[in-house]
Image (tube, rainbow, N blue to C red):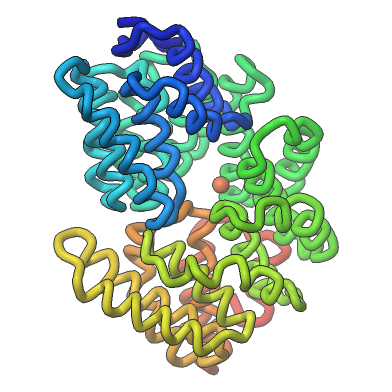
Length: 435
Ligand SMILES: [Fe+2]
């Protein structure tokens, strides 16, 4: 038995395996390149169960059912040593297995068990954080991070996870405080910078947010492409709030799309930015057709409704209506076959969310409003973050406005704005729809 960098017991005699475990953990929580190296480590150290489990975890985080299935062979190898493993390692197998099966809610339950007994396990917390993004369960995310945070005051990355959970639950002043404290520990804590981007966006602190993120941006190239693109997405959203379409498209071209066009994370940032751009009155031009070949196959997977919906929307905007109809029929069939929580997520929310978004893309605004309206109060359960899910509320009030239902559109716009100070984009909508 040896111990990893968090002081957690690992069943192995190999220093090389411990080094691979530490590297995977460090890359995952700091968002620096290196996570895929665990696959080579799994070949070199087939007898270390934890290395196998982490290799499987990489697949569980892929947001693709086909990719996730490829993680199961690693778990089978880990289970060959089950009798020798400690409780944390055994629970980790169950957690990653649930993630590979696409049952993210159950996976989070196992990760929470790990945090309850071993709160220093920040990798378990990081994976739980991602699955909570897929289930949209921000309350549970905060509960886990509040248990994990106090045991990891030495880690700015752990504090940034706590900060982000606070942000997603609307506790933005505390989220900002905790993020700034993490940045005092490590000025390059990328996840803390990301959390601040959410806070600035949600609080409409546009100028301040742009100044801060532009100050951070020169350091971003040393981080993984996923978070580089994603933080640029947030910066571009602040440009969009100022109606500065030229800088939005520069960010899209220079930092967001075309780096790893096969990666789901890149699809998400690119699709959402184009969708938001068009909602603001900008022109995405031929960019939808550039994305389409890279997402066509993934549109036929049902991983979580938010992801399925944005794929269907992008493909429809690219003009591939027949493909969208086939994929939508699969979503409806999949939803019918779900039970328990998944039945609510897919049947009550996911199907309407997808149908409404497709209708919006087709300019059928009456149908879009009828479908999207009932989903908004519980749209979080389909996954995505607060800033990402706003496309549905914006598409809804614009559907009402374009369908000629001005009073309902005005009310929906007011509901969307809540008590936020309006930014230039909001003021444009208020002028168009009426405040
Ligand atoms: Fe984000």
